[in-house]
Length: 137
Image 1 (cartoon, rainbow, N blue to C red):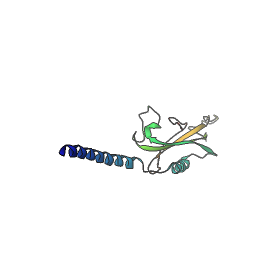
Image 2: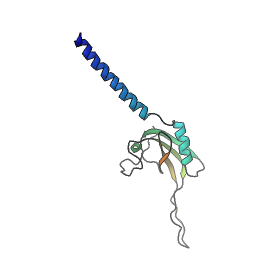
Image 3: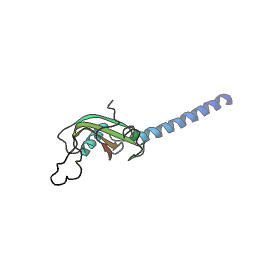
């Protein structure tokens, strides 16, 4: 009889442990704002623009979106984030004022921008223009 009970007990303990670990990982990884809340939060971070069209929104790890290959991260690589990308005309900085008699030479506007937000609360982490490392899928 013990030969049947012991393997069953071990399997039951292993299944229970796997369930506890799985629930802890699932609950830790998934609570956060919705994609529509992420879009609204990202729109509030956009510079003054006439119109910006949504390119896409994705959830993932910070290093999935922030300059692949870069080591200069504003957040831990594995931090769960929302990346929201827009298309439009986004004007950059023209730099310091020109000397008297000279003309300012501003770069042409970028046509895309990405806003990276914290997955849980939607707080701003980074922004990039033009978009790099984003696949709208």
